[in-house]
Length: 81
Image 1 (cartoon, helix red, strand yellow):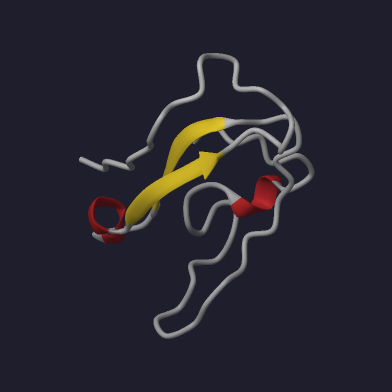
Image 2 (tube, one colour):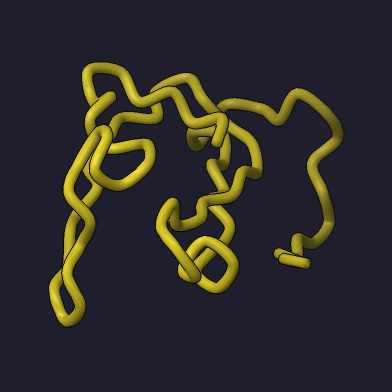
């Protein structure tokens, strides 16, 4: 949530509404542009029990040569609770 997926609205949302669910043993590639976006966000499943068990972090760093909008951190750690 929070990543702007320009021209890609069918790839974000609940199963059977914006797209068919990904079948067991199959895969799906999400291909979207994050130009001028940065931050730490998270993703999660939108179907049944997967919603509580399948999730993770999306970390969008500034482009090389573009400064952080705050002092650059000395270290980074992803913590998902």
